[in-house]
Length: 380
Image: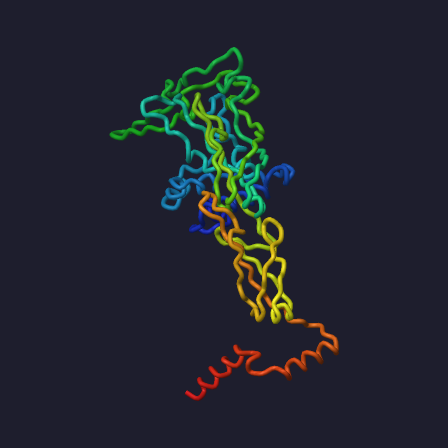
C-alpha cells in the first residue's frame, strides 16, 4: 500500500496550506540532488515527496485524497515530459523549482480553456510566489529590492512549439487530435485523457533538442521590486505578467512577492504601533530625568517625571509605522523599567540605609495601601 501523504511530509491531516508548503520546502531542500550528490535513495525519496505535495497543495485533490485515497486524487507522476508530446506533462524538476524559487499551487490560477475550443486553446501560465525577507525599518519606510528567480520561458529555438526546426506537430493518431479517448463497455461509456498525447491532441515526431519537446526552458529572471511603506509579514505584492509562460499563445501568470519582516532587536510591532522597553536608573525614577529613547529615525528625548514607577508606559505619537493604505501613522510605546542596583559599595549601602531611616508612610504610598488591604482582608 502507498504511504500516507501526510506522513511523507511529516504534517497532520488538519495542517494548513502554509504548514504543508513549509514542510515540503524543508524536505525538498534536504533531498535535493545538489545536497545528496545524486544518491538514488534520496532521488526516490524526493519523487515520493513531490507526489505527496502535488496532491496536498491542491484543495480539490486533497479533498478527494482525504475521502478516497491516492487513487481518488489521481496521484502519481507520469514520468516527466511525455516523449514526443509537446507539453504533455510537467517537468519532473518542477517541484524542486517550487521549493527553491517558490510557486503558487500549480494550476490554481490557470485560465480554463473555453468549452468547445479543443485541446489547443490558449492557456494562462501558472503564478509564482517569491518569499522576501526585509527589516523592520525597510518595512516602515519602504524599499526597492532586486530579486532573482527561475521561471519557464517559451523555448527560443522552437518558439514554444516543441518541434525541431523544419518540423511541426501532427494530430495524435490515437485520439485524432481531440485530446480525449472514449472507452465503452456494455451500457457504459467513459471519456478520459488520451494516454499518448496527454490531452494535447498533438504529437511531435521530431522534438526540439533544446527543450526536449516541452516547448519550455527554465531561465533566470531578475526584477526590481518596490515595496511600499507600512507592509508587514503576510503582505503580498503582485507583479503582473511575471509568472510562468502560457500555453498556445496564452498570457503569462503573475508573480506574488510574499513579505516576511524580520524580528527587530529593539522594537516589537503590533499593527502600526511599536513597543520597546527602556531601563532607567533608581535616581532617575525618583528625581525625574530627560532620557534618550530609540525611534526608527534615531533617538528622541523623553521626559521621565519624578516618582515614575517601573512599568509606566510613555507614548511617542506618530513615531511608529505608517499604515500601508496611507490612513495614519502608529505610535511608539516606551515602557520604563526601573533598574535595581545590585553591586553597591559600602558607602552606597550606608546611604541607602540612611534614606530608609528617613522614609515615612508618605514615601511609599502604594506599599502602605497594600498593607491596609491585607489588614482589612484578615479583619473581615
